[in-house]
Image (tube, rainbow, N blue to C red):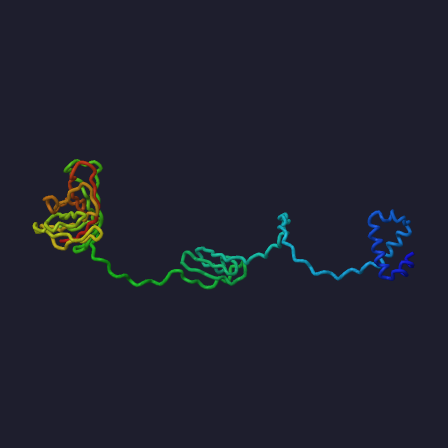
Length: 300
């Protein structure tokens, strides 16, 4: 049958006829044409024979978007323990005793030995470990004798020398003073001083604002320092040395030289002539306090 088709339509016509036939076979054409199974197989074989060859591979398409990150994996198993390291070199020992170590004290190479009875050190030991030899010669741990120091100040034991300047601090406090009550201020030198013909030290109380120049009418020396830089006067006042007492701060206390009061206090000596006590008065009832510094030059 196919030979007759080819003879009538040629090879091109045969191909077209086969393609049409294959297309018809996609539906119910097999049943309508009344082809038997052998004829159907022949049609399929012919279709395969004249089917076109596969074309060349096309170009690759663009890359698709990156996928989402995957889930975190499980923790891996613990690795095996590493091998133990080698032992370090033994440290050195400092030994001690009262006798020389050579021949009597065992030690290891590199050890030291201090002989406490003579302040000497031996080592490092060169003998073998566990032996009492190889300690070497001693080296003194005590330096050479130093040069004599310069002479000290010419203080007589227990007494401040004439012309020496002494400085210190003072304070006074009363939590509930009465008006005009004396509030004692103790000025302690910390060391006895000689007392001249006057028999006492006069105390010049300087308020926080500084000395009162008007006080000079009394013919007494004026202390010119401050609480942060206490400075003494060098000349005697009223026949006695002067202690310059500078107030850093005060509350409810009248000092001499203020409000028409006296300029200087003839202070009462402390025990062993080691200072003086003065007593300014509370200006009114209530708490009264003050603190500051003092300076004095020891006078004959």
